[in-house]
Image 1 (cartoon, one colour):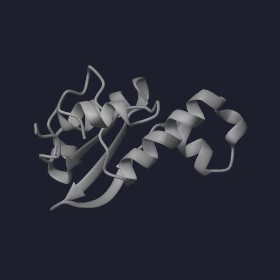
Image 2: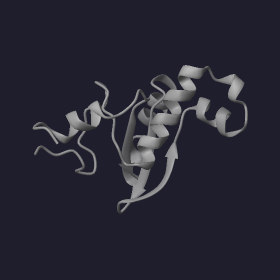
Image 3: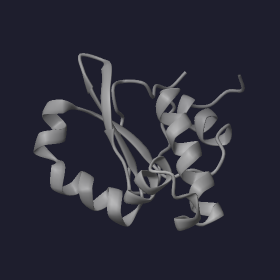
Length: 111
């Protein structure tokens, strides 16, 4: 890997996706209004964990439409970005948008 931060490497190796962030269930309870606003406005996906084990996610309504079997209700670009964000969540890759510059779970470190 070239010199630089892990964050730079992750940003360069991912396809376009909506922001993904992780928080503990405790943080999720405390930040629920902010998480819901981000899910609605920025279409972000928030993974919830307890002691490092993923328990669930808060997802935008467009993702629910896809899961419910209504792919025509979501345009192709949004569908692709939701799919890529979900893959990033499952692979524990974090995408930082300017609004989400957080060092979460200690996963982003400098080399």
